[in-house]
Length: 182
Image (tube, rainbow, N blue to C red):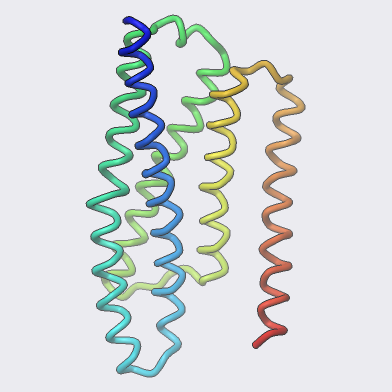
């Protein structure tokens, strides 16, 4: 595969990766608002439920899922065009995170279906934590793709967990600060 073709595929892969993550981040935000709307008065709740359902469906089926499909498609074409990448240990780790991200995607889809049926199984707090999991996937995938495994495994593992703990602490701090202002 020539450089221009590979670079074009890589560019398209990254563009759709960004779109996929934007969709994943925003859909869970909508889930949070949708869940929190259940505490409102009945008329307001009905209007918001209808609106959130429309927004979730459009975001999911027009942006998020097509972006996932195109990200995976362009990534697969790049791997086929450059099979030597499959020999690199960092690529195996990256693909493991991608597989986990795809599972995350379909679990989020399942949660969307539950919300549309009026089944609110998760608190807004749990949904906020769920949203941070996507951030950890993003950081891990990009970190591996850019460094190509040049950083030692134990340092990367410690950094990954430190980031996760840091994000959870920031969420708790945010909750405390917002409770004080209300």
